[in-house]
Image 1 (cartoon, rainbow, N blue to C red):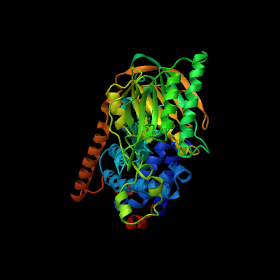
Image 2 (image 1 turned 180 degrees about the vertical axis):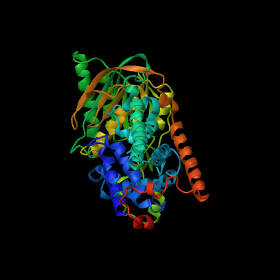
Image 3 (image 1 turned 90 degrees about the vertical axis):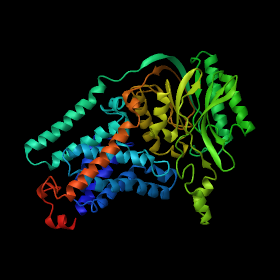
Image 4 (image 1 turned 30 degrees about the vertical axis):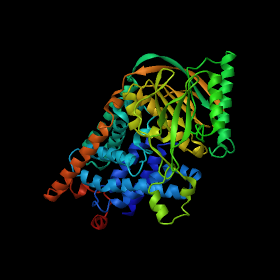
Length: 521
């Protein structure tokens, strides 16, 4: 068991290395293979330990940025919670390994696990999905055909086929497993030469404003009025450049999340600043604002602010972050008298989730909005595209994470979403990373971190849906149902005495595994 646990921990660290800041995606199949080999041949209960070792190692490294942004306790708790999903997956993998063509079953279970932890508990946590590490690989264009879940399945299957090659007996069987992996990789790479292209309905000139955060740059509440003023000044500077002919007049302007960290409808100073900026540029501005939702609640919204009609349509963040933007079970915590619970002071009001599924209309353009962590979830983005979105926008703050690798991880996810949607995507951040991304994931314009900038780019407006978006949540549902079916078949087969399809000699990780280890397992 110590050897298996070590293999699991090393595999978890390999998986983390596939993401930013290292971004070595070739390690993805090796990490998945290591996980499978670490639990293969164990009893279901015994597989919990290496599964937990893998999950903890992966998330402790993958979300290390929480230490410097939120705190060590949050890092440990979230890593433990997310790592538990990989512990729970391990017994399921043990059962599925009994089935014929087990790589298919195990890969489906991996993706089903990703889908489950994206939804539960509370708001879910999408970080760490296999597909999110593939943006700079030949497989990235396949996401337009397969969707996020489908691409994760391909990557998980590659890892399972590598594991199958390791445990296969004889050169012929190993060659078959490796040949299947190579064939899968080649087929999944075909969209690199045949990318899915949506039809173009027109063009629009988009301006992305990054105003900067006062102070050290990592706290939007340090000077909320000054934060809004920074974006007002950057927009007025853009208007001056337009008047001087240095840049093209934009059709719409995007401000980031928290560009008004005080309610723009309650604060006269903030409201006047927005009006001043919108009047200067003379086109609608998509403002990011914290808006009161009553004495105990708040909304995180994108607000369309028109130079003639003022504030109009709004998008509310669909996925507020548990313990970051709201406190689950706040009433219980307060009833227990835990006044020293630090998050109660940091988050005095709970953020309410939005449910908008239609794009915003900004200067006649149908805009699909996502606010910060929304970019990691499929539901809102898919719904707005199905409702006719022509352009994608991400409003994000990232101020709390500006000195960490979270910023790069989120930007990589954002680039992948542009490929998946087949649409242009504009990212507005308070102080980084802002940018404009083409449908093939190329960053055509970006602003430096901690600086102030206004990016102006002409983008194409797209119509239609990629197959990945058209399928929506159905691949995830299919993988979940197939996993449940496989577990049922595996359990029934075992109980009827059929036992393992592979005999004990094939149930070992290697020929050096001792009989004593198998008996203790």
